[in-house]
Length: 348
Ligand code: SF4
Image 1 (cartoon, rainbow, N blue to C red):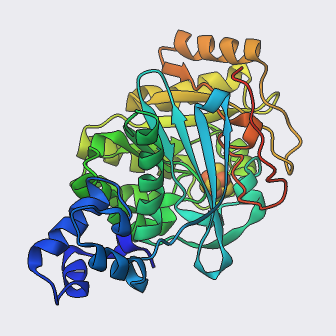
Image 2 (image 1 turned 180 degrees about the vertical axis):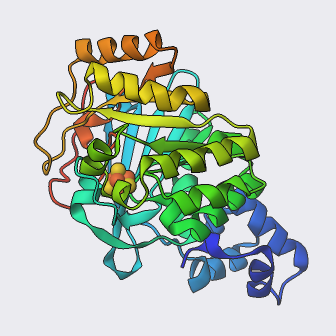
């Protein structure tokens, strides 16, 4: 349970014995000013002291470690949750914007072979407040360096569409109360087809990123076991429905693995899927994880694959890897307390 699980009425009920405007001040302090209840200066000191020991207002995340990389431009937090689960949250600062990568589950049941989270297995779903609290943590940190948190990507630990109700509850909360536009929120999925269909009917205009990684069923299923349950034809049909309903462009994520999915035939198959959907393709050179021995495509190979895709007419970019030195890059989040000695890496 997190204070960010509470509705406005529930906050009002906690403060039922004081004037109503105090509940509004508490709410504004928590969401607009990103403050701890005990830091909200407009509240009387006695009330702040009381709020500090109010169990419903306690934080859900106990940050055990914060590490930085890229000259301080990437931050990763390891947080302990109730019941002993651990999650990681990564904040990345770019010249023009700051983005937080948020976890939606402790661990993940999808077992994608190349992903450290999948290698560790599933822990539990996160609640709405635990997801929102990660965003607040990052927004506070961004503000401390004079920046603003612009974007939220649900690409951390877990499969967001397998925890649909909490993820959408959190998205609604950050849009309505933290003031981050739905168009600045991206939900990633490894291909949970019923979740994509459901998302297509949501009024919120969030972005959808589909982790494809293989453009034929045999290859995709070898990397993403969920591909056996939802073959590519079914996944593409759900994507078509999403695009038709929302008129928004989806993106396909593609972790480039040397000799596995970086061949000319892979580029041709991927382009054949992406083009009719007018999808954007994000190429991510595979980041190393302990449980997967294949290596990422070389920088020259990445450029060649990008150029091949572009020559087929696909809209493609290469995602710049951040946080690799602190195991904070895509596919590396494991929330292991082992090896957590702070490591600060220089910007490459
Ligand atoms: S890539 Fe995403 S869906 Fe697959 S195991 Fe990792 S966290 Fe889960």
